[in-house]
Length: 542
Ligand code: OOB
Image 1 (cartoon, rainbow, N blue to C red):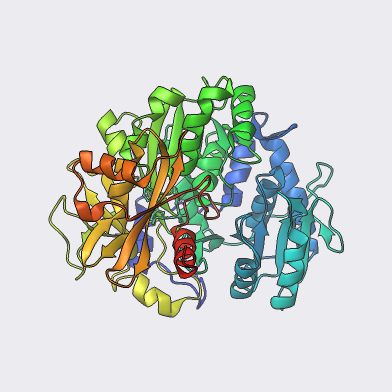
Image 2: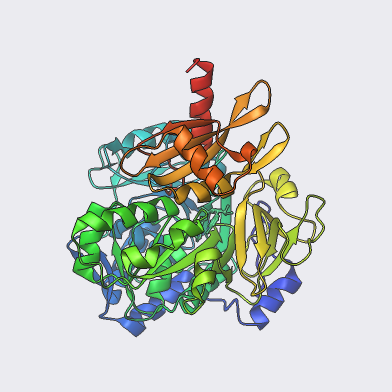
């Protein structure tokens, strides 16, 4: 089968595509083909739970058919982009699959995105439609839609879940019928994910049906998902991790049940875990730390939870080691990226591997290289930047030729910007970002290393070390601390770090105690915002 992704997209070279097919990674089924198969195989099992709504696989598929027919009636079809910005609601699920059926391409924005990102996404993708909820968490998304309409001339439709105001309602009623055939090829783009960069605007990541189908099915296998899996979507569902790693889609492919949580906060999630007997969920490290605290006073029965996946940012060993004793479940570390590559620790890996590494590439076809600043491979076990390519890792961002020239090697490896070393067992340990090194008068300080030590301090729940501008040294260090109980002082922390044998230049120069960290859209700590905060404080003479 040929594919023609168009001039703005970088395809896999033909010989790679051929190999991925021959070796069974790409099976030329669209995500809509998968949905139809699931509806046939798992008919009356519960697919989705959202509050009081519980839909079987058959019912989900029927609603997808109805919505696809209606979107088709609006003129939305193959190759059209639709910016989707919805909270964890059943409508999100129906909409994504309706778009897959039409061969239209959802651009998955996060609820935290605002005018800056949304107008950029609508413009860059030439979106014909933008789908939002009316209001959520005190924010009115219809205001955002008005801005997007002004800024993006290609935008023809705004569809709203809830009160549509002057826009069109997005209804996913059970009464609607539709029997449109599947449109488009499995080699075409199924959806666009956004890069998780903590600087600048997110870039669009094209994911084809073939590559994403493999992504979710292989993930489900590696993570041992089966028909008894009850997956709690606690993180924003539009993020790759809860969406397809294995997440919601990986749960569907084995006939399990997906429970949608309105937020990842313990008061929203713990009662759901108890009520629905949730078996597995995924969190970013700041949330995992919060859950480990909250479980002590929540008084909820979380005994059904057997696996907690943590990824998205480094889950430091000091914290990872406490998962079993606090939450009474198994930890699985996940090192992944919207660009593709996924690494998981195995459910039967020994404790030191689960606590101390970020897992192993999930596919035999994942190729990885660890290179030095000159691009030469380092000796086994040495630290370097991770480059990767494989059957579900992109070959280029969408409409970003100039950026792509830097982000990929000549032979198609994606430069992740992550600093890793590979252990003897083939597991990766992430030691930071290429740029998460603070340069204090020439002495290089790894933020990760200092943060990990600080997590061992009894009065520290979480810590983030950032550089702050300094006339003499260029940069000094400031540590932001989320306290546990009484806040520590800088001398406390310095004495503590010294007692753990840290070199003097690594000791933080300044402490800021906060009650929350600024987050990225998916809840990772935003160091960019912390740096802006400390820079502003210094400029104001504070
Ligand atoms: C996931 O995806 P993105 O696209 O939001 O962010 C990817 C980046 C990675 O390049 C790396 O810098 C960081 O996030 N990261 C980790 C990590 N997992 C992701 N850094 C250290 N340790 C980890 N375990 O974040 C994502 C996508 C799919 C599954 C899980 C996470």
